[in-house]
Length: 304
Image (cartoon, rainbow, N blue to C red):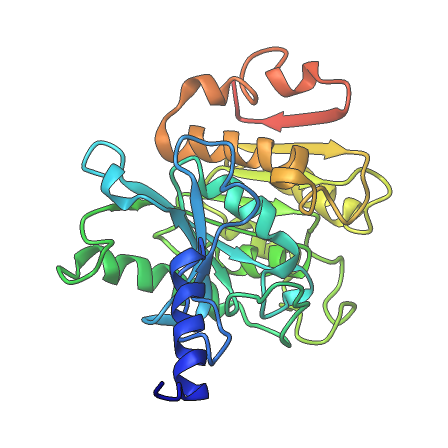
């Protein structure tokens, strides 16, 4: 019998791994995944995947797995996300971001796709949020892209947690932005008091916000509570909503499907970017829907 070479065996096993895996992979010898499903893909109508796009390897993309389900009537609005600690990896937030995406959003987070168990890859900058927006717009107009004519480039949100929230605020004046969500964050009372690399914003910057804005905070135990609520109290020129849940600075991002924070953020995005008034009832009316949940404390301005 002809001797089978060890390399051949390795390649066969690699092929079997690729066939049986639920994730798309580069050749198994490299051990690097190109995509994977987070949890079960989310609870929304469009089960999501997390992936690396070769045209944007500096970011992590979350999108509906079945892009054939996306057409002219349900194009994907965009959410550009900045991570806690201005980290160059969304590893802490993948449950949350996958859940949002499963409701029909293209989510683009700063930093390369994290491997299983990976925890961070250095620091990032606010400019990476604009890079995400630029990429989405370019992909939508590129006939060779799987995203061609499937993105609603008129509906773009910027968001982030903690230091990433400041990155979102720094990006908020961009005229392409339609709404802003600030999570466990707020502008410090004076510049220079934060961590290295943190956007050095002053409270005057809030006047540059030109869209509806949502603050999701962790209650008085959240180290960003005072900063976030001070922001909210200063904002009078656009619709603003503040939601506090007594969970501290860590939020609920790592809970199954991102926990309660993802429910509030997703409802806001459905309302603001998809015109879903049923989802908007969480924030509208007297009292608003979210205020009926005893785990949340709410305040709002310029929202009926």
